[in-house]
Length: 201
Figure 1 (cartoon, rainbow, N blue to C red):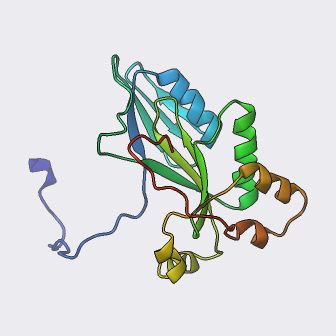
Figure 2: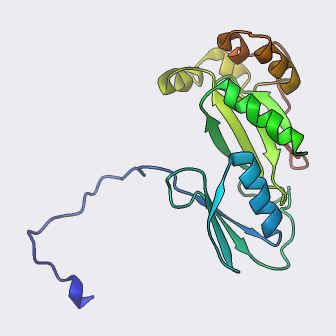
């Protein structure tokens, strides 16, 4: 560490908490690496940046990697009754991109585990080949402020989970030319069931 001796003006570290500038990536452990690579490449349009026998790095944008998959033999599937990460979520630019992704991956045999209009987002949930939860969503409102404001409404307090919806009905309405505002409206229906320890969604 001698090479790090200071030569410039002295400065003090800020004592205030710092906020990250972005969420960079997450890493999964798997004994099922190639199917995992294929799944994330299909669902999120990821590409392999670098792969070794130990780890594979993937991205979908200019970040050097958004996902790492560590290759470890003999792992067991996630236990639904063990605490930990429930799912990761990705936001699409509009309802058309979300529905196009739904239809494209369905043609590949990738079906959602459940579809819920949460109020602030329209969300389609999936399970990757190892059983990890992945949410694909689109914001209902045009601004982050409006989306955040929904969390303070009485409607959200009464139903913080949302309402289940039929993605095929939404696709049909989209293709028929329904206004985007109508497609993003929360449908009528009972509150969706909370996720339970035995649920796959």
